[in-house]
Image (cartoon, rainbow, N blue to C red; front, side, top):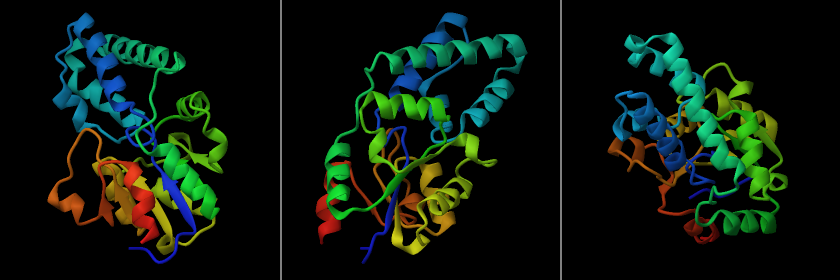
Length: 220
């Protein structure tokens, strides 16, 4: 248990928003339409990494289809995903609003540090009406190395102006937890699509099924 929290860093996909399934379903739909051999197991391999890294891997895995076909696959998948985002049908995860309310009461500043691109982050935060509840955003455009590299969280610390030991990260992915651990920042995991391994469990402060459980924990 942490004695004092001066700032909080939130991941976004799979933690604040139930987006991971949307990404998968959009990509699977396009893969099926284009006859790409794609499945959920492949999707889960790249959970929590940057768009750039995912695209590089798709080009490697599907190189036999040719560069142009892979580019089309990637582009169509993103377009399908963004249509869902713009429709406003992306639900907040359970407990998000309750936790933000609790942090408001304690006047604890927080930011979003996501491997996603800034336009997508702002689109989702605006759509849910919670963008103003964060004092800043650190996105994939702000770093050169994606999670599990700790760069994004170190940058987020600079934005918050807090010490690592007095800052708390919320993450849902293996890569995110690994990055937090490498940055020396305490992390609470709320797993989304993948249950934590023993190695990942050792790197976390706590693991919860929902963000709804966090305020009670922090009050102890």
